[in-house]
Image (cartoon, rainbow, N blue to C red; front, side, top):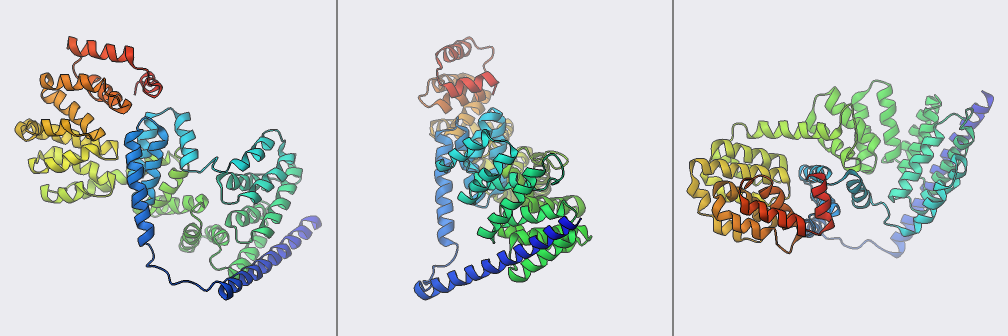
Length: 478
């Protein structure tokens, strides 16, 4: 007991010294920059960044269509949509990619594009050392990795592992690695006093040893010096929940997450409070999506994927339920994929011919569920007004847009099979792999099953197709 009290006192002193030295360092740096590099007159905030995000989105859209059979192109589009403040679209693009590709292929692309794994080749040596080390030997390697690249995926993962080891008992079989990990985190915090993840990892090691008074003291001291410290705000939220102060917890976790977008702990707590305690699904959306974006397999009682679909679907259905054709025009142009998809479904129900041009544009949407629902709406309109659709056959089938052309082939294969079959057969021989793949899966897998010419063309395609990405998808039955 005396040993624990002594270590607790030393840790409090250490944290105080780290915070003081950090404050002095920050002050010195600010003063130096002010004296020698006066602040320049800045442009209006946001305009340049917004332009870059829209340019990135346009580039990602082009790459998505050009390399549709590559999972990385799907995730680049999802990330560009997310950064353009279109989370619903980003979610549905990721959701479709998870279903289309093998789980391993998707996971590798996700780690590279979303998480940023492997972007720093210099860190490969650390990973090689870790694979051959036992827990105690791994601690100094993890510490070096966290020090070398604190903002990288590998650096954050190293701190997570140090945190996991540090939270174990010093008196159990993992005692040595627990002790060494806490020492490593202390050293890292001295070097990076404002790093929220390192701060939280170290202080939570106190929490897990039931040293809650020490946690309260450290958090209060830190916030008195750094009111915006994301790690201290996270711990403030934990303490508020412990005290039954939900409103204070929400405020603290929100500040923590806003100052540290990688803080999935705070995001999870906020999602749970808004969704499960307060029954406010809309407020939970950004936090559940933050969890999903970082880990598409995330669970919170049920798959986070399921929760997100439920929230977006219910909200969209409520919005669209009473909408007439005029209101649907605006919803079909929405930047929210769930609203566009539901608006297409409503257009199918109303069979509104006036919406045909808008629905035709959505055949080339970024999101598969929107493309599918727009296709279905056009088919339903054709049941009562065939000329509104058939009169556009030449225009739609002659366009070069990947998804619109493929969806139109399927639509007219259903409405006018004899005239469409030669065009569908030609698509099976297109030089673009994605066109061949979509012609097979959207047209021949659903229509012409009893047509000898179609069967012969499909058999020839399957015999001649050599593209490994297409063949891999065919083997999966996608």
